[in-house]
Amino acid sequence: MIAILDNIRSMHNVGAVFRTSDGVGIEKIYLCGYTPAPVDEKLGHIRPQVAKVALGAEEWIAWEKRPTAWRLLDELKKQGYTIIALEQSKRSVPLESVHLTKAQWEKGALVVGHELEGLSPAILKRADIIAEIPMAGKKNSLNVSVAFGIASYALAFNRKK
Image (cartoon, rainbow, N blue to C red):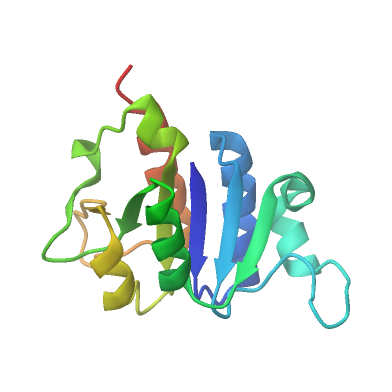
């Protein structure tokens, strides 16, 4: 499984996704749009806001910056990846109903987006599965790194054997 972060603003959220990715076995993270990388591209130094939360995971989880997530998704689909978008949508299914095969996990891409706006229609159009975390409260949303953690663990441990 790979992770795709599209237009995530918070460096702390990015660091948390790196740390969770290490725990769940994500092999690579793509940082798209204005999502900050662990290393400042202009100055070449580690961003302390990412490192503080990632606790070193940013040093061994492979990552790559990409300007646009939808172009990356087009590439991945050609390579046979299953694209799983985490978003509330008319097309979304409850996360607990998504059961990936081992092959789908290995060639799967979990996409999360902007903390307030979510994923764009261009991303959702390319998704094979749009999953949503059922909500019981009034707020009807979670922090993006928390949602990523819930979804990545659910997908990893609800796999079909």
